[in-house]
Every structure is written in structure tokens, then in C-alpha cells.
Length: 116
Image (cartoon, rainbow, N blue to C red; front, side, top):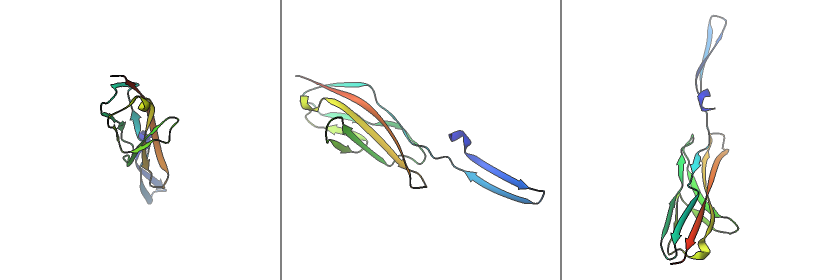
């Protein structure tokens, strides 16, 4: 828990003291609205909104369900969107802990492309 972070002092007997700092690392938190409607032919730009983890997120990417689609970056950009672009998209945010392990978070949004 983030509230577990702080400085701790260990006292053994009356002479020896050790001080250590505990830093708590945690993944980012991703937020997206449920559905975004747009009209065929327009440019689509969706932001992967997030609350930073510790350390801050360093990698963002998007995928589309049932597709090989992958878009790197915090902002999903689809120029001249078509009906075939309708579907469920997931934004992933990652950070890397000091141990080398990764913290991951994701959220989905439904893109509904309507006829002109």
C-alpha cells in the first residue's frame, strides 16, 4: 500500500540504530469513458487518461479486440476512420519497478463509427 511508505528506525538495545527508507512502487491507473461515437471519414483521437504510478508510466500502447492492431503511444490516432474501425480498443500503461518487474494497467473503450 502506498501508505506504507516512509522512514523507519530500528533500535537494538540503547546504542545501535539503523534508519531505512521504504518506497512503495505501484502500477498506474487507466481511465477511459465507455463509448465514443464518431462519423465515418473523420479523424479520431482518443487520450489514454491515467493516474501516474510509482515510478511514472513510461510505455503506452493500444490494441483492438479480435485484431492484430497495435498502436504505440498515449494518444490513439486513426485518420479518416471507417466503419471497419468500429470495435473495442484497450489502452495499456506500464511502468518498470526497481526490481525490473513491470506494473501494468488497462482500460477499454468502445468505438462506434456511424455512417455519414
